[in-house]
Image 1 (cartoon, rainbow, N blue to C red):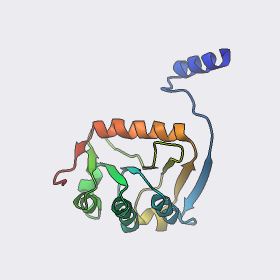
Image 2: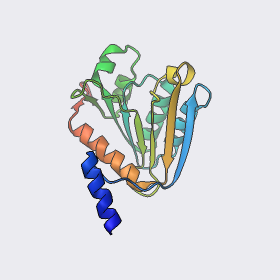
Image 3: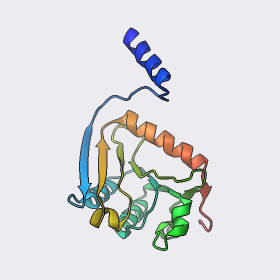
Length: 180
């Protein structure tokens, strides 16, 4: 008990907002352009049974957009948060396609850059998957850039923390205009 108390005090002293989470589950580590990060991400989306929550800086990959649409077609609740400025700058953004396909899209406007690159799959429950890293959801991220992608499975506490953060961001975001 003294160790837990000391750990909490140390986190508060260092300015940490929460206690460390236990390291459980598995980690897939991929580096582009050598590893097929996009393929691993799409396979993980194919496992979704209940929900997919996306935080994207930029989404131009047709394959990832298709996998999100396929999940929605299977009855999975899919929701997307994205950086508004990147939507406005990129003519190749697939956010309008997702929105027009019935996937709710919110745009983050509060930050200089909403630079998160996160996908949460079935984040509530024991089988949640957290996907994160520098990997943008673009063709270039796989084919031209040096990026990293982590696929974290079997850590329910981690998935819940990421989902809480996703919800906090969505609460401060604006629904994309023209949304059905």
